[in-house]
Image: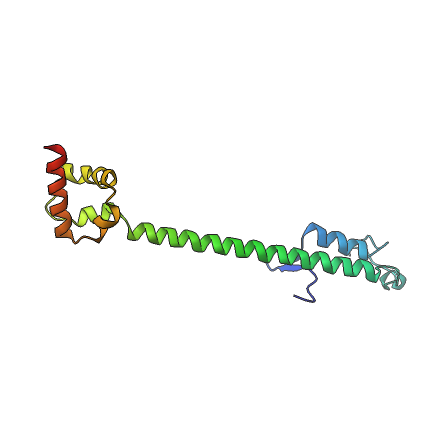
Length: 150
């Protein structure tokens, strides 16, 4: 990246690509040469004058480009971090899915299955419920449903 001009190549359109700032700096560096390359130039027009770009503006440009690259790297790192956090959350949620655990529990009628989540959250038993075997869940559900709705 040390010698990167900031220009890219689009193979579909077969044109150079760059941000507006890079184009602006490029066009400024060309000085009086405003043509887009479609007109013929004399030899004098093609020669680069020493006044076209000072070393100070070149170093400023390099500083801006480096700063921009640092910003891009920082944003990419932030996005990567958010993606990792989202994947962890999704994994945790899929592992702690009460409804899947209820569906795995044998011998429950539909009405009871729909009452169980409310009961689990009411009693604050989510973690304990998920750690139970399917048979233990069934017994726990039957016991607590009878107790709550008897």
